[in-house]
Length: 88
Length: 333
Image (cartoon, rainbow over all chains, first blue to last red; front, top):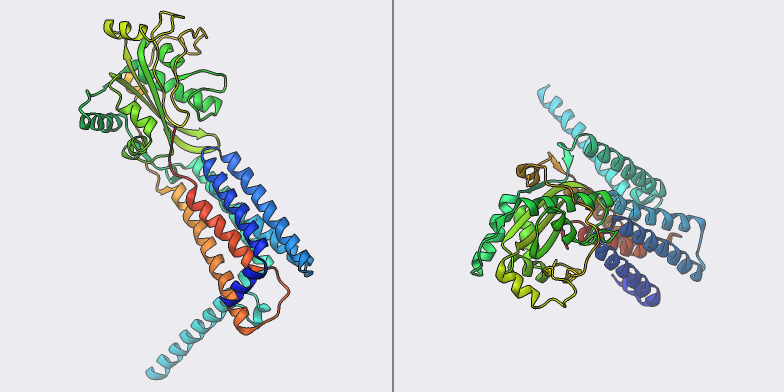
């Protein structure tokens, strides 16, 4: 927990902006509840933001590698796939 | 000899259990055998999971299309129940019960078919056709008319409860202006979603006193009666008194009443909505659990790795989990 607290504190701007965008994404998805295409489009946008922000974050931390980029892309794709699995 | 055999069996079972435990640790916990990262979090495992989900989606979609009796949307909605529940609510407020009207049932059925054909979820169609056009087209000359829409509900009582919880819809259901009611309950694919659509149309026909009363509030553009309202999220719709647009549905009623007010009773072996949600939730919960375990163990053992921030993944996957919990279910308009 101390590690998480420390990380959260060190990268407050990063985690708060990530949380804000992701929460907005959830709100938009829930409000477009009868339009599957819109919900999937919002999911793609939110995932794109998540991957981009992860890359920027690691770049600023000077520890960005190809492996890390692949990991963000894979986790993002997994998140999108789960939403598509339910809505598509 | 018997004791020796029993001991061998016990050892054998213990070996198997040890193997399974070892394998689970390899899958779920960071340690040397998996390069200090749970095997399920390796890129290959995540890629496998993505492919599995795509294949599972393809498989379930095929089963839904070809064997809806096995996997499909579950619904049990009947016009009789909708009428009974609606009238129960009206009686509680001391209002007269509504009567099932074949013309309004035709109007509701045509409206539902129009929504499926043109793929829209709204009171007015994309080409501007209002609910009143369908009501008039079915031959119902109304003094007052209204429309409630619902989709994605499993039972009649769920539909009524949702309408009663929405002020606009409740006003329609409890309006003393209406005498007749008509329903259409039709399953189909609407705006990309396999669902059961319920159209409820209310109305009351011309009466000498109504005509007099309504003409007194009209703006003098026309002597036709004023339609009052449809309800729902779009708010109140007033039928323009000078509306001269041709109705898209002007053919006479030819369908028998029973075919227009048919119940929808779909009870597949497995309800696709809840089944898919359970699979997705299970995958997310397992992944979140492994990521959190990974963060805790790595921190505890002070292992240095060059990997992405797992907290980010936990936040992202948790938000996806919240999203899938919040999507789905029924909607009213």
